[in-house]
Length: 276
Image 1 (cartoon, rainbow, N blue to C red):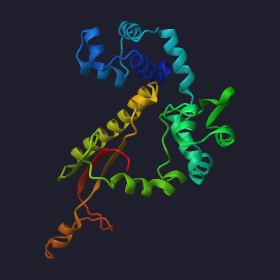
Image 2 (image 1 turned 180 degrees about the horizontal axis):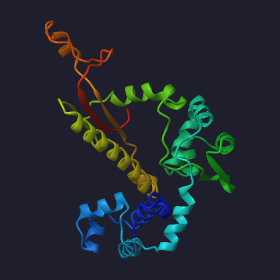
Image 3 (image 1 turned 180 degrees about the vertical axis):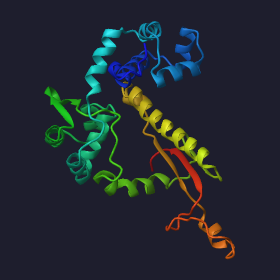
Image 4 (image 1 turned 45 degrees about the vertical axis):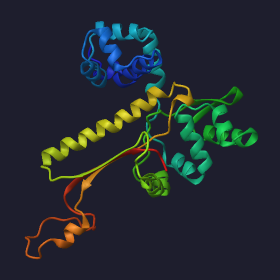
């Protein structure tokens, strides 16, 4: 059974299977032991969606579910939009409290948890929820329960209202840290790479970004006290340190350089840590 076929709705079905495995507390390593395969094989299997029917049935059994239930869950999430409209982003960008509430709901927080932690209680919280409902971002249910009307793995528009308003501030606050505490990591590498290597690196970073989102979706079912807010920044662009540019020989043959002072060679920055 090749789940890469469009009709099989691979992404939603695999996501439902991963969530079910996570609820059972099953890691890739534990699944590998049960299926007598390597951990790397399990990761490839679930990332590419190439499973035999027997493997899919076995994984469903390990996850404590069956194909019918997985298909039901997949159908319920497959049609959810993965990008917000300009109007929805504009409304969120204009109201920090509305943006925060939406962000926390997407992250799996309950309304009660949010109300207690951020002092959004009573009428104030209800009004914000009603606005999210009118915007088509959530469905407001009785007793202030909600159902998301966008995919948890939605993406902000690269040049949309939210990133234009908060993008620079987020990066400044995020990088204003020594990155020497628990759950932190900062690496910065500048190397000269071929076009082929640059493309390989770009794809690896894209896959890593997707894995971050995937882990967040899986962990959304865990109690909030078992989750930690973690920021992850991935970046890659042509770059040469300004000092190196300034010291280059005036007799050096001209090379294709970008107009900005940022530089002209391939580099990469990856940083993981706590928000400031």
